[in-house]
Image (cartoon, rainbow, N blue to C red; front, side, top):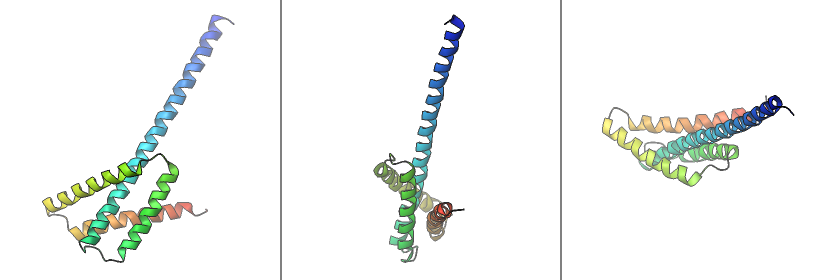
Length: 136
């Protein structure tokens, strides 16, 4: 083996590690994105639950929202079982609390509308999951 072929072999090996590293980073980024998305849907669900407690949404929306978040959660956890559900739920409660503080402080957003938007976000995602699961 000459020096040139050793150098090429070394470049291939380094290139292979570089590609493997990029794939790991990209996989980690995907996990972070899934985590962000799931936390966002958990936040929407926490908003809906508080809206139901405050009678800003009709009681029959409780089961609809519960079914939607169950479907969404299953979808994301199937894609990445390593997502830390407990941490995401805690963060979602904090996000929900901050959201309600902002709504109360601005008084420019109708609380019923804020509640309805959160419910619609859940329902839209659940329908999207159903639609993507259908054979085409």
